[in-house]
Image 1 (cartoon, rainbow, N blue to C red):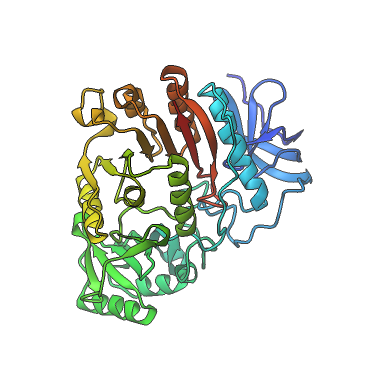
Image 2 (tube, helix red, strand yellow):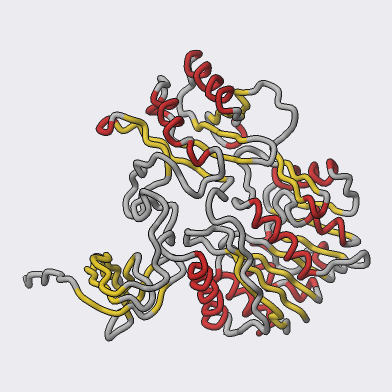
Length: 439
């Protein structure tokens, strides 16, 4: 049996860069993806993994650095899996993501946009108001680790603060480690959910064993000392209960002041992670859709009403459609608490749409979509049944947006009037974008 040849370091110029921070060596043969290398850089690298159509490599040395390379702000950048682009300037991060959007539309959707929107930008540090922190009692380190998982391993990063978490949670890693280390169930507490609302900060502790009276006393004291809402989650989401304080004055919420809307949400429920960018995104989406009193608007994948309620301030009638019953109930309650009577909500599995649903054909002339990463292929395929003249599509994955945009333009006769990126997740590989389509 032939002995496998030992891999040796190689030197090459990086031809381009992916939106998740990997440099690409095109050259001859298979492409090589070099994590952490930037376009134009001369680097030494070592191939680590061989795939069918490409290889993955470790960056060994930068021989000629890109002018866009900067020093990372975080002490554990490169090891922590939370961020992938802290070594790239903010402007270049947005350029990389814009190029990814443009390339995906051309390559997958076989279309281009008639106009490119200016990148939507906001705070790049301390912006993340929702997060799931992993927890592990590591006896070899003599402490409980709290944080994000490592980039290349299933371990929890040994970190002491987080530069992207919203205040005050950014500096709460060590206090949480000390708190959990003092609990009898420290080895049976795998995660903490973080939610930073406009009116409060909430922590949801996932507990696999019931806390003792001493444990709950420590958790309550922690909540009081740091002015937090403390929740326990012994089972599924329905098991979440408030431990401290016993009776808060109001639910967690965020305001969209431009539309005089207040949206309540659950401590472990979905909200957009970047509050300032979310406000700007809602503004831009509604400006692009341009609803008026005569318009009937369909808001698909509506969640708890992030777009539906502001739309109801401008449009004649709004229907929000969502697959999860608990979100439909929350959106309905939010509409009532905001005094909005021209918006309603219904539950429907939008991945199982076939075009025969009667509510699709109720005269909706404008549509807003904000699907998950898997996109909106089924509802886009049924867009002829809706007959909307204008569509705004908010996406968190450029590939599925491009696929669905191709269907709208090439199969249904829409024009891609404008598109652009939304800098919702600075320093990470996550990518938000928006596109508007017109008949």
